[in-house]
Image (cartoon, rainbow, N blue to C red; front, side, top):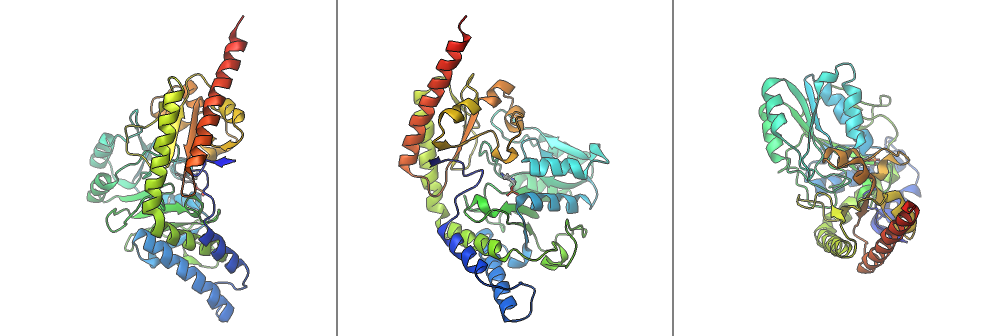
Length: 382
Ligand code: PMP
């Protein structure tokens, strides 16, 4: 099996596996005051520090959650409660778009969705206008897209939003641990992440809340007052320990990993575009994450291509909406037709991808596209 689905989930890093197993093997609730409780709390605090070091923020600015979905819901709900319009983009993950729709359900005109151009770059002109004309409470813009890898430089939008008194949230799920992110430089107020995208375990993530951010107290989960009253529930010590270890490994290795994955991604793209007539790389002219490529094979349904190369784990559209057969809202927002969206495969690479994986994936994909095209041609004949 060649695993090229890192944007759906990355393989667990060995360091994260060790830390998770070690924590699973010891008893202790991080809230208990006895020795074993303090031992669990030490693992949690260590992980908080490791994540803070990766992001260059302070450990006290991190709230552990069950993942980015929860962090996004929490951020949007709390920030929207400040009042004002919520601005987001058409290419957000459903964990932002659906959360934005849910929190503004009673006042749908208080949700403004920014369009993107054909390369997936956000059009910021309407943001200017809305910040001038209306009171904006929160601007939520993903830093890197999960389907295309297209990245957004948030700094100009942060400046504009802050001048207008709005908070800025970013869904950085696909970016954290893949490229360096310095929160002293990128001055978002809120940031969501999920451990399993950078080699930590599934089901654990975090919300960064910049110190001094005035957020009305609207936790998603109330109960025992964990995480300073923001997220009740016994802490997932093993998951958090794994997240911390993955964050530390990523911090130490991401510079080399980014160069490595970008090189392999470029080889993959060059080989596929050379061997498959008329295929197209989406967002190719925009700055993109190092390890992602979204490739349209016009007229060739992506699900048939994937079925014809079972030895390659890749994805059609966004695997996060597993089972859903609707066309990718990201590609539609970029102006692609429904047919093109249905003919798009996402390959996503990461730290453990090898050159051999890419050779095998290219051979399999070229064969798969030819095979599907020949079947389609044969069945189209009278
Ligand atoms: N945001 C983005 C950009 C994602 O890619 C994902 C996962 N595919 C999520 C949020 C949700 O993450 P999780 O399912 O781990 O909560």
